[in-house]
Amino acid sequence: MERLAAEPLTCQLYPRALGFYPVARGHQMQRELHDDHLLLYCTAGAGTLTLGEARYAIAAGDVVIIPAGRAHHYCSDHQRPWTVYWVHFAGALAQAMSEWLAASAAPVKRLGLNARLLALFDAQFSLREQGSNWDAAVHACHQLQFLLSHIAQMLGRAAESAGRLDIARIKGVMMAHIHDHIDLDALAADAALSKYHFAKVFKAQTGQSPIHYFIELKMQQACYLLDTSRQSIKQVALNLGYEDAYYFSRLFKKVMGVSPARYRAGLHNV
Image (cartoon, rainbow, N blue to C red; front, side):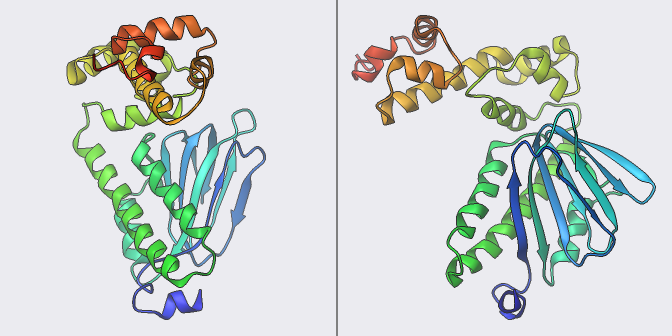
């Protein structure tokens, strides 16, 4: 930490701690004084944040920004424990970055689930696993700056595109459920719209119904598994949340034009 704070390549912005807590039942934290700026990204479940007299609900897809020096208390919901990524950051740019992310008084901001953002958080963890390697530490600092600026850009776009659906965010929600199921009600609720209005706007922007779009994502993942793994067709079906392999095969053929077996045999270009 001392070297990160002193070196020209890293002193502007660097992570002091980061973590990923899946289904964190009982997770809570209370701080009166702290020197770091803090970012939380909730990807499932729910929780609450208390800042002074104000109390905020946190749901899947929310980003929480807590500047340094603010006393706070946050906790995971008992009934629906959250899954969160978090990072403490410091440096000469930390205050300005925190203010850019905040952009308004509300510390909890609706961002939604985003596949690229999840990949950026995962990249931070992969760098952390390299231990005390200095080159990896330098890269982690610049990766953090890209991560935070990407979130700020997404928040800005979300404000600009009010009234339109963020298809990338909706795709992120779908990708989070690629191994199981999600229905129209859940997708519409995430977008804070009635399911009828959500379906209408989604189709107007993409040309497809939400459920058909989700099925196509599943079939794309099926193609990837058939191309790159030795899983049986039944295993591929189970991996994507289909217990009936015959139903999966019929659905695959309807979308791709060939059965999974013919696709794997390389006959899909015939």
